Length: 227
Image (cartoon, rainbow, N blue to C red; front, side):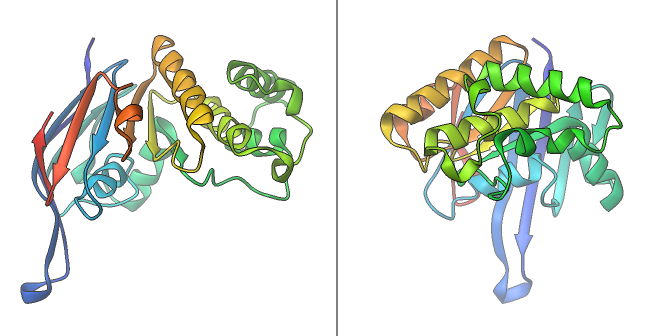
C-alpha cells in the first residue's frame, strides 16, 4: 500500500523560554494506506497533540508533515483557510464523548457533513442510510440520540464520519466511554472499515483495544519510543 502520511522532525512547543512546554519534540512518523495505527502513552505524553496535528486541529511549531490524498499537501506550509479545507476534504473524526447534537435525531446528526455539499435530498438520504447500515443502526434513523445507548451513540458518530468518504479517520479514545462489549463491537466496525479502504489512527489507553492496530506506536515525553 502507498504512503498516506510522512512526518519528519515534528515539534510542537507551547509557551516561551522558562515556561516552554515541549508537547512533541522531534517526532518521525509514517502511515500507510489501509493501516490501523494505535497510539499509546501516559497522560501528557503528546499522543493527543500528535493526533490533533495530523487532523489539522492544531499547528506544528517546526518540522514537515506531508499528506497524500486526492492531491499532495505539505501541512506545515498551509494557512488557516487552507488547513480548514484540507481537514474538510480529507479527515473524519471520532471522539470519546461522541460529539453528537443532542436535540437531533440519528439521521440529522449523520447528514450534517453533507449539508454543505449541495447534494439533493435523495442523494444525501442514500449516503446516510448506507453509512447507518454499515454500522448496524439504520432502524434508529428517526430516534433522538439522547435515547440511544452509549454503543449506539458511538455507532452514530462513526456513521457521521463515514458519510464524508474521507481516506483518513482519526479516533480519540473511541471506546473510552463504552463498556468492554460495546468497545469490542466498535473496534470490529473500525477494523471492517479498513477493508473498505480506510486508514485509521486511534489514540487509546487500553491494551486490548490497541491490539486491533497493525502497529502500536508509543509516545513518552513528546517522543516516539517504539513503532
